[in-house]
Image 1 (cartoon, rainbow, N blue to C red):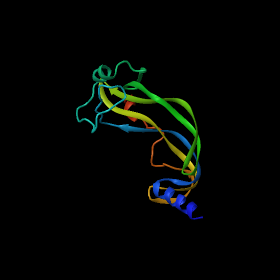
Image 2: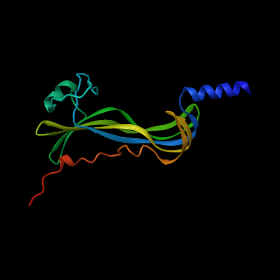
Image 3: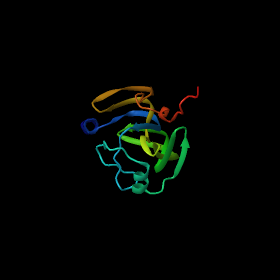
Image 4: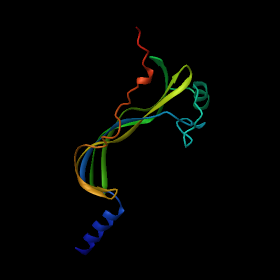
Length: 165
């Protein structure tokens, strides 16, 4: 009994513990300032105050996966691995993921007249959970959507064409 209590206490002190299942999905973030490096899909931090041009991006990162026109924007897309979806269980300290690749993780650079407007990046995150978890100094029961403050799909209004009157 004493050994079991010690093992449980060490688990609690180390990080996340609990008994829960969850879903994993894709979210998007947007940035209006970026400072790219000369290596594809990497950035220098903090973001630059100098505006990026289309030519600078293509010169530094090379050929993109696609270039498409949408409204006023030209969108240059680079892939950065896979995007994943699925479910997983968390049993005490052991995560048990069941994930499948569902697409390519993308970084989309939006340009208007060759000048940078925004970067929209995809990333994976837990989207829903059910069970009891302790982690980040908090314990509690989760049931339903999580990470509600995060954006599933960025609304790309800056590419809208001006209305015709």
